[in-house]
Amino acid sequence: MIWDRLLRNLHLATLAEPDGWGTIRDAAVAFHDGRIAWLGPAAELPHQAARQVTDLGGAWVTPGLIDCHTHLIFAGNRVEEFERRLEGVSYAEIAARGGGIMATVRATRGAGLEELVEAGRERLGNLLREGVTTVEIKSGYGLDPESELRMLRAARILGRELPVSVTTTFLGLHALPPEYAEDRAAYVDLVAGEMLERALAEGLVDMVDAFLEGIAFTAEEVGRLFRVAKARGLPLRLHADQLADGGGAALAASFGALSADHLEYTSEAGVRAMAEAGTVAVLLPGAFYTLRETRRPPVEAFRRHGVPMAVATDVNPGSSPLLSPLAALNMACILFGLRPVEAVRGMTAHAARALGLAEDRGTLGIGKRADLAVWRIAHPAELCYWLGADPLELLFIAGEPVVPPARRIVPPRPAALRPSLRPAARQPRRAPRSR
Ligand code: NIG
Ligand code: FE
Image: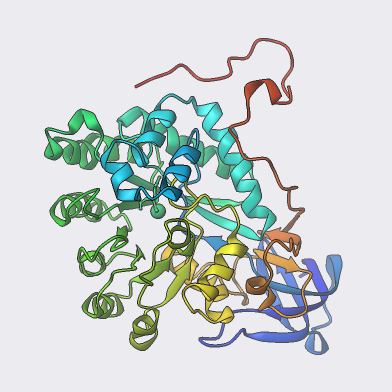
């Protein structure tokens, strides 16, 4: 057999050991059919031919980063809300007055498919630029059947268009739309019924998530959706215990959810339940930072109980306008006290687990998908150390080299400033509005 590609002259952080980086200095890696066919010390490299040989000049190689929690498809932004929060108005107050998530819902309902794809593409480019090869994207800014489907279609289009793998999460229970203010049960029925059915029929749903919180949905409402989703064999996630202890961690665990996310207020009992269920704790330091929270997730308890911790950007226009996975790693260390190796494992091995993909990716080993990030650094802890360093040199996604895109301006840009990339021939800028 001839390998498709051989990488030489590199150091590896495989993240394949339970503790530590899984370092192999002076290593080599071979790919075949998009998978890792061999890896180890260069001195032990078998005599085997490769179609292409790439010298990485002593760079460090890690698994491609996995951003396992994002809301990166949305229209508009919430910079006014950012200003109001700085004046002292809280996230929950803004939500209670119809702003917050609902402000983004109004903008997203008014955006066509093409506009959502374009905005998502630019944001996703920023993640690739910092080493992301797999990203999860949630719905949840549509909150009506057509708009939720449009968000999920946009996510699928990005997954087809760009080399990165996209996993979709249906988050119909993100906020209660005002048209259902008098009938919460009817909205939950719509989400667990028509919305989920239609999204599944179109092949748009990989996982199901919900927002369990005083400003969002109750345990009973989430339970109703989760029972339906679980009966359909769908993996579950939960936004839990972000602003108060709502028993979210234990609820997620009781459904065998892949992950519970945020978790600032999770109790010891919640941690224990997660440990027993094998539910991953997804830490989102960007939201903690942006909302200037002071209560930190129970990292020490997660360690003690052996709950795997993942780290993600939570990219969204409200609580985490963070387009930098490396900054999220830095924040996980500085704000939550993770060790660099824990933070990087949180965006590789444990993030893969939070997406149900641990068998396939997230660590480097023979048979794993050949998703790798090549970094100009002298030690992998530098991924957590620098802020704004732009250290990524190259990506390999399913064994193919991908030159990371340049940093992009994040929309919305004023229409007049958009470069006219399309031929002058009439092309509608947006799909017909539907609601
Ligand atoms: O993960 N917590 C709920 N959802 C998002 C925030 C969404 C928004 O503010 O637009 C989060 O932080
Ligand atoms: Fe979120």
